Length: 355
Image (cartoon, rainbow, N blue to C red; front, top):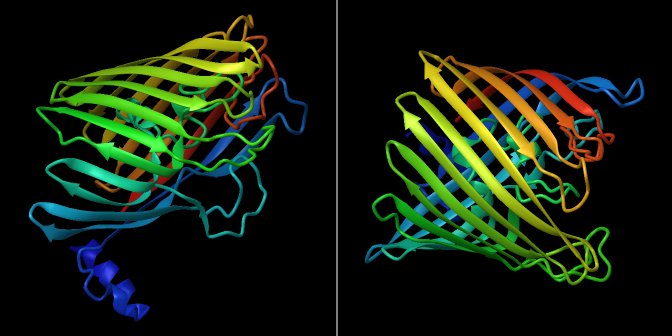
């Protein structure tokens, strides 16, 4: 009720007649910041360590649903990332833009047939891992620094623009999701000539009170190697035991690394979390294998997280993480900042509030 009243107040303040009948708008958001100390054992001083304030995908959004009759509804959402630190992630560079990125935003229809919409949205491949992700796919400590990332820095932890998605109704705990991102035929950075950015992503998900399972697949033209196609297959499972959960993720990624070379790698992650009273503790261990025939191109990552909930919406949290690269790998907290064979380590203390 409070969220609806806030939305109505905003509409009234801006005297927007078009909003007059939108009493079903929900206004929501999240603020999540931390101060962290990070270091890289192969960087040259003074760039071998830093103390940073990091924005962990803080966001602001509006969403709602309109009943169209006969079981049909229009659904809509507009969400954008906000950056209270006023700096670029991992640096002290100022960013004056108040809203840095468009997040999940859509317009669509919902009914007995399921949900179909278009806009910008997380891929089914990415979402399949969310149930076992401890850090909301954001910040230095997330498993998304390894899981879903190839040895040549291509990411499947993505949100797609110009995206069309269809979600089946939930049937006895099962749901299917499919996404087709149209993209635009434009010249991407480092791509010659212009490349087709269309992407297909799909998943099948089953969940009940004791178990979560998902199988996801993605297929897309390689954006830097002409004539190559990238693919990814992911299997996620989690067992729920009261206030505890144990999860396992396995994925196989295949990417073009040269005009006639397709390189594959295997990644996996073991994660767990447990709630006791107002506290939650969680940890994961992830390992990326070699990419193709490149020896010693894998990495290992460990993260530990503790959270104390002052309320259902406000949490004080602390985390430690370490990424250890093999001799020819360059995974890092901040993409592109690692030296081959280096180890990144960091500790952070943060506060988050959801509204």
